Image (cartoon, rainbow, N blue to C red):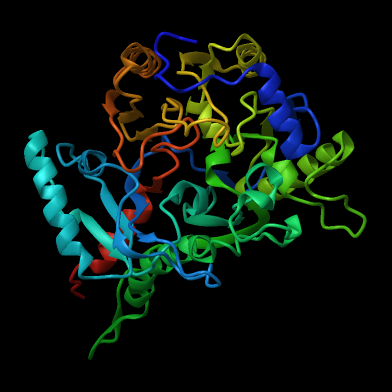
Length: 461
């Protein structure tokens, strides 16, 4: 046990990790592999480190719906999954191009409460909060994990227009619906986000919110001259046909994507003879990955897919718990105190280095299997938020100070010229080894936001 391990928290042995993985997937972790499809498409994916004009977050209720009504949204007191400090800092009002905050919340009266709380936090930090840079989207979600169900952005290289690539948000952690309350015994391929349907619709709600005023602008006529305004770009809409989650999606600006094998355990092939979802053979996995890459190439321009075996054995299987693209040629991979886990991370790092990436490593506090002992309370440093020229890093806090300082140092070394800020978590929603600020935020490209803002301006012929 590390001297930084909090009292009462036990570190799982490699044997327990492997046992947990086998119990959930039925097979040991497959070997990491790179799939390629050299077909040029007129679209290219937008990485999270591209210029962003807004961040999407959610403000759901905290009380679960009544038994038998699992598809209703939570109710009662509302809460953000991220601390007020992060929201204030995300506005970047000290920069030349502030960032807008889009909040999923179907209660207009909540705006005053939010503004008051964030203004007080900004005053305490010596920063500026601008209430005109925070907007409520009239839609209530089931959770605050906007990274998982939020939009994936692409840009049409021929026209310059943007588009949302919508996946079906699935809550099937590890490929098993048994981890979703109320979904026990349900066949895996029926778990198409139906247990969090309001989350699954979140990307649609955001798209309608942003495109609505632009469509109105483009239809407007000035009487009596009937003069039309110069049209504004409406973002397009594609559907990938895949079950997926944003926490298991990392992409570069050069059409390279990385994820864990979770995507292959969640997506069956669209053929009648496909095997049971939760126990795919190596041949099944390979066929599924070929199909998944074909879909992502078609709608997102992806030409290279690094599918990686999750070394941690945790239930969630999301790559953002231990890996992150920092730039087109840089990647961050976790380091573990567990020799077996770390050896697997070493292999992943070597594979990415072979593909031309400069690999940076960050030591994380001990990882835990959620639910195995006490709840996990340590931060996954790769579960950070890159927002323009700033990086916000989740801090593990008391007892983990050496790890926190080491993580900040790695980011500063990897991204010179960026402002790197450590962010403590909320007490009621702590950063976890499987869930931190990357999971709870989603960027919106600057040009998409600018088009929306333009449509809100008073226009003259």
